[in-house]
Length: 306
Image 1: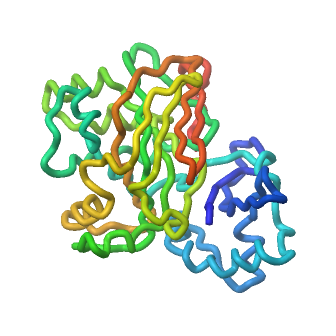
Image 2: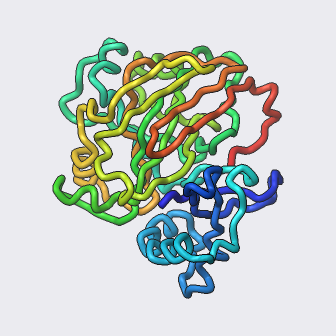
């Protein structure tokens, strides 16, 4: 099941709505099924809170089968006819992992860590597919970092590695955009990375959340990042230093994980700068393509990220 969020109209007052992306041979362009309209008649309540909705995704599985196997596709819109938003528009927390690929640690002149490096990124940095990454003036170098992100769907604390994947609602793509010069200054002063990671629009996410049942092994995925069509990053998630169960177990020993937590699992080597006018794309075949243009702040006009 592919969970999406979208707007019907390009209006700041238009609410972001949850939907399910459905494709088959007769609908190659896809259809977005409105969750509320599709599930209310079947007695399934849709939680108002986004993170609670993520926790309820497994309960929708049977209703989705009914919708997609029968003739109940009445509350649908063409995928190309809606405005996509991030599948988790305001994560409970973003618990990001640094240097989780050996080649990336090497390109950063850093040692391979002996335990996961964890940092937070502001939830307000999140934007959806197609929304612009905004580079403020005088900020210096800004880098892309393509990553597989894990979305937590069930609470857990002190979770054993063998049970860790049972907490996962699904997977998505995330671009951990980083103000690199700001981060280096923070390094030099032994300060956290938070500010260099958390500017508005520095957290593109999408294009959808693929539920865990559709990805048998998240360590057998191929991630590709391009800038203006040129391949910059290409790696298998099998190259992670710490696996997803190891990351979940490690985090849950330090804090309770909750529905709506998002864990970007680290970026492979090949990171590089972004400039206004660029288009950056991240792709995993099982998830899709996350594409975002890059603009200068003077083009943005202070518009709030969704």
